[in-house]
Length: 283
Ligand code: AMP
Image (tube, rainbow, N blue to C red; front, top):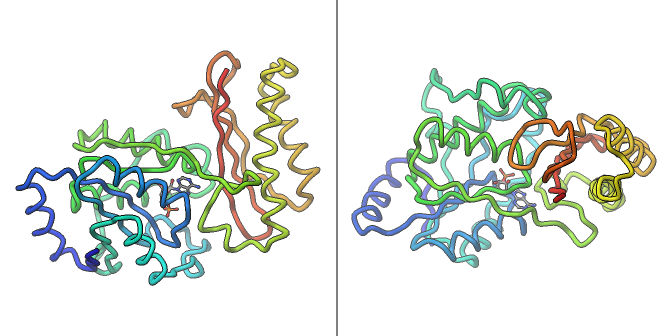
């Protein structure tokens, strides 16, 4: 596996791959790799000739008081995992190389970023879309792999690629969970074992919502949200709920009637850790 840290060295490699008509699979990450990331890498390996992972902790998508400084950076372990998962090239650029001088140009989602995490983390999706577009321009992948775990991010990236005619296929992969239902996340490392156990109640709340909807016990949106919040607060007393919402699956449109496949989403705080998750409810 090649490890490349600077932009200048990546360009000739991509040109050579393009000249040989090799298909490029790309998995962008912020590192601290876990089974969720590895599932994307596995899928990329199955579908492409040459596989690239990026590890870049993008300051532009972190708010002032967020966890950029304490975000885990186990680079040696990550390198080993990438190599074990058949990655051909790990691109791990420095911030100064990616943001060389003040950036004046950004990618902004006008509407879809004004809800859910976008409301709670102003500027977050501007940072995400800008770095993803920059990485797409550098890597020029045929296929790029993202997790459903970050559902709003996935929708926004798909939309950006469509709106800006970026020539890449976006492939969404299912959320990988621990056996108790807790979605894998680099931020789980902030939680102790007791908190992790309590955090698994998020998944329990999704299953409860699914049951209430399928058994037609609840038909009104607000009642469903109340029942989910009640379940969460009863099981995780010190939880702070940023949002619980139910959307039509594949969109960011609020589900006023439960008559087609749905997506329930949550963002909560457990102590100082913000966790997001979502779950598809097929009707
Ligand atoms: P991150 O390193 O958090 O930026 O995540 C990099 C990619 O991995 C994103 O596309 C995430 O949606 C995806 N990802 C993170 N956690 C999971 C998970 N538990 N299952 C599947 N994909 C995930």
